Image 1 (cartoon, rainbow, N blue to C red):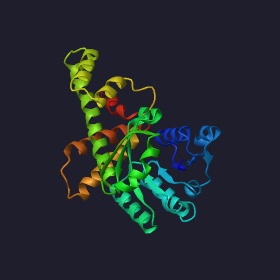
Image 2 (cartoon, rainbow, N blue to C red):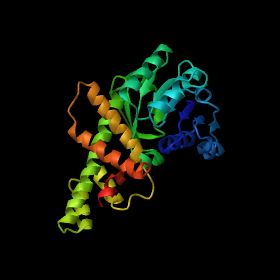
Image 3 (spheres, rainbow, N blue to C red):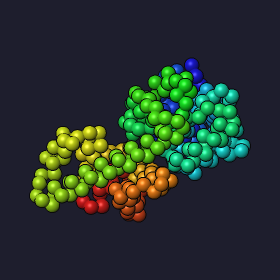
Image 4 (cartoon, rainbow, N blue to C red):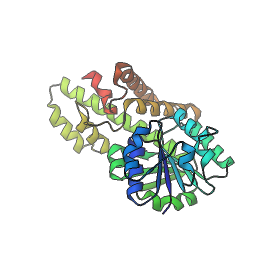
Length: 287
């Protein structure tokens, strides 16, 4: 079975590494805070000293770090980065949510090294990651993707190809923007329900039915006290909204008034000290 390296062991990366390991793959793991790998190593994964070490000998390398800055450091460091250690013929992928500009630059660096690259951000949150039911949103050569799809079965229920490299990232930024808008809309609807004397529980249950959908259910389950565990933090959602705004500007200055308002809401929540709370916390300040 293909050897897999997972670089970055946050909520998503840790769960993915564990599912690859449980699926019979030899898995190398690296994280900036080594302790996050302890349980994986105890279960049989190999602790890599550097991203380059993790990539060495891997058939598939997946990076799942926080943002452009962390991604750049694990890929491009001359001595310790993924590109310094990747084996010829390996497929390289980022499953982080990054800016369009950095993904394009990274794809170029991989091409210069003669290595195939896919941008492959994820959706499904903590539940999807821990259950092995993620959806992979892919940009890049479809033929390259086909070579790793059997391996991805260990972590994903669906793999969706959106076009050339960078397309997966562009879709993910659009998706996260729309999901954030849905969360904010739910909170506003509930504030209006309270102000007009409606029973909030009854309103919430009705909204789950119509308009319904995954995000309505998530908002309902988290309202008003938040979920038991963070699935996606306010700070990382805010980061993605900023990347989406940059994408809109780079696309010719697309008018995005909803996105602009959302960034204000998320910025206010971060400034209020709720950066590490679940992103449903954007509605807490108005309760």
